[in-house]
Image (cartoon, rainbow, N blue to C red; front, side, top):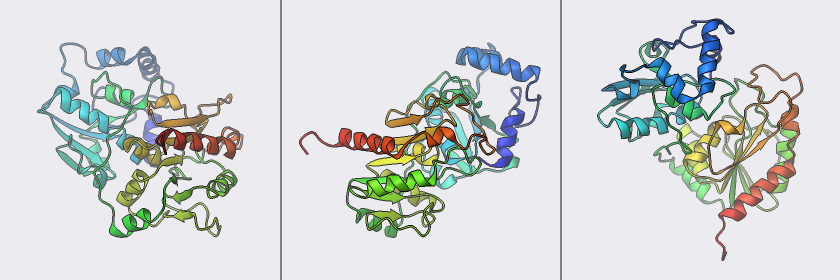
Length: 335
């Protein structure tokens, strides 16, 4: 999510049109009413926004959509909603405005995929959710088009990696543990401490192959031996997604990699700490490590005043045990 989009989320969204704009103060009457309705459930929200006989957005002949959240994970969470719109209204022409169009162009439920811009956002319907959500994020986003709906899997992108990345990854023996140590930079409060990652990798590489992905390596200058392979900062987005699809277990914060692993049905160890509650996702292949400290879930975008205590409480041994359990569960009984 960009800083601009984060600010828009804080200020509020219009419920009476399809534009992103500030329509109430943070604690104003409209915001209080919205929070009340959201916590009453999907049916209450939908009935208030589109009272009978008003047609709900998913029933239109055409829809233009985008995600308020600007991260890849936010956009991937839109994909089961596309699928459900197509199921209920097969003739609807769906256009999606994406910050990552290369990931979504092959989606079978979309008619048109175009690059996102602030200009197109004024003409399209936003899919959004509230911080500290009372039900899964996908469910809240589905309500934005009038759907009472839940999903436990996002749609896998249909992608083809570069030959170099394919060859390099296929040369790495299984089992492969793919890690994404760093989340997006709009908040520092999803970041498990680097010393914890270092300790975990030291234990993992005694038995497994470890592959790092992301925009930049967290371990510049460190040596973990021949079982550690970093692709961080050296792949396209398509290649990154494909590398995750080749994992036996994925490990990382609640960020893009976690959503991609869900799409490809990869067993996942998600290091939540206390930034958000794992109940915001119905992902069946994820073991979620959550610290229920007093301030959790915080959704705090500024530096944590408690030095990310929730993340420091999660020990490398806990993560290692969760990885070992995931590998054992995936291994054939007679292996």
